[in-house]
Image (cartoon, rainbow, N blue to C red):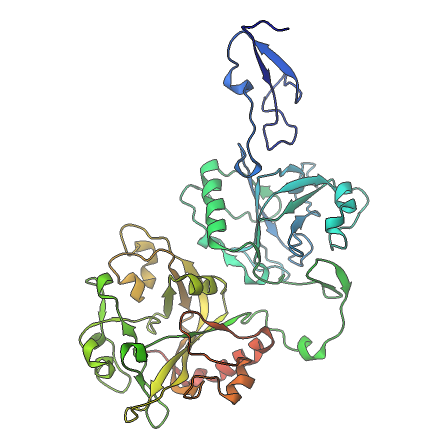
Length: 487
């Protein structure tokens, strides 16, 4: 029986219940041992037990994924596993797989290899939910048949398991999109090895950012899936069958996604953009919300019409002389939206993807009915998840100030802005008919785009099916000679 004045302190796990002591230096007690004190124990001996996702001393590892093949990391089957990582092995130091513990974070950035997405891009981000011995990984039924479930003669000691992962692959996001307010050095590690010198404040900010911005799971296929074998959704490896119809259409360097969005004045505002007999048209934006205007807001009378004068003469009478929400704008090629549905869609876009705009148009002499027409497109240069900062608009994003959302008095929470390439973005000289009077996709456009049904809805865009992306991109490029930016 101990003295009533004694306090019994049990040294326990310092990191997420994995059996490591919180003590440093010589005389470090083994986990689970007892120490007795005549008073309250010093802070360094007090019990440290925290949930894995809020671990003390959380570490962020950054390294280069030089071969993004779906093998290491393996993002299939609802798990992201990292097993065959050798960074540090040649120098005799432990590698990322051996060092990372539950609650730590890992970011893999692109390398210069043709099998990766290039420097300055993020291949994947994952939180380590478990670190298990490699022999247990081989026996665990959850991972049966995974591509990385291979024993290479004892070189692998552990396997890292994650259910909280964000894998981008060939749709890699830009490293510069990551907020770095609490970081005084680059997050990207270039060359061999890894870095883990990130302060706790930055790691907390980083974890909150990625979980708030992206949905858990895969956002793109690997940059270079295995050529002789095919990685299935479960992460298993099987021999690939030859598919001549798709093997001849490589478009990894081009668009991986094409999104169609409805924009411009519609009958809900009492009017439509004009369509001229020769197929030319005027793009007339919607009115700006009067509660959000500022001295920077753009008037309809300040937007030149390609047919002469300004678009003010094509707006419904009640909006003439008023403020326009000129978005998309075809001077610096930007489009923004903070709404939930479109925000999610825009965040899925990556460099070289295509954003196609269509609008309701009608001949000026026609009083009834309306059809929808493809009027222009952006080749995506960059996607910005814009933080609402003071002062507004933020000086660091001055190149985006022509966009209607940056002309408002205050920033819109959740705003995402797509920046288009100035070389391959613009309005079409002639509109391309998309729908009939019921706003159902025309038969020839069904075949071309792979879309059916109504395209009337403006609250969310329509994705071109993956089977049609390459052909639609080629078709759009064929229209480039007719593309002319709005001056």
